[in-house]
Length: 320
Image (cartoon, rainbow, N blue to C red):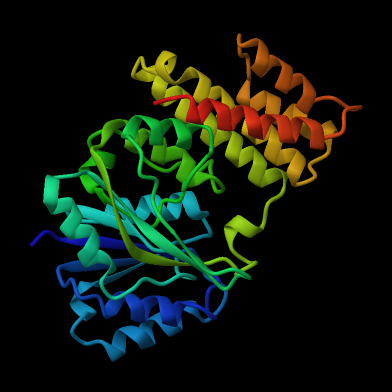
């Protein structure tokens, strides 16, 4: 029975962490290690975590808590979890979310069915107006990679199981410069290297009404972090001499950063900061047109926004 390391960042989640931890400790799969990384949480999160651990003596030997000396941000927190892990596989769980009792068992069973490196599961959106299950994309790995590169489909690091060596043997990891879109900075690289499959079993409950989470606090700093994530991916594909095969998808991913900046009302006067990071130079005339439209001080944003969505959709569904 393979060991699975469950990696959990902890910061400012005193309202949610008990439900998260309880869901981890009642897993039907038993060969686990739990690594909680405390990013200097300012509230009672760690006290609540310790209380939960005391309630489960059968799990205590499987738990490790890592305390950061200072607040590092989510990228470094995730990387510290990977560095500390000893399991053959790892899975990520954010401490404001929780997982079903059979989640890890379902993922492991799928991994063992074909010696896969990456297993994607379904997840359930909770706490929002329309709760629903979201299934993984039933597409080829090449199409899934292209979708991910241009920011379409599930780009979260959670609701998945990864072979740990996929990170360690391929120099894939999280950066201290990326605290937003950190998932994007590694997922395309992992999908490029790993053998992927999926299960329609719900393996994760995603809480979409925690407005204090990283994904709900989008500002210029977040957008610039997203730009850096795109640069990391671009450099990875250049390093492995594969960018030419994924050029269009990578360019669309970079253009999506400008689209997102508009959607979150980043002033056009600050787009130069994004330009400095992305250093965007596409030879594709359509990409050039969108770049100019996203930088236009006179054009209504709704026009390029709608056109870009159609263009990106056409690219995805015209491929494989």
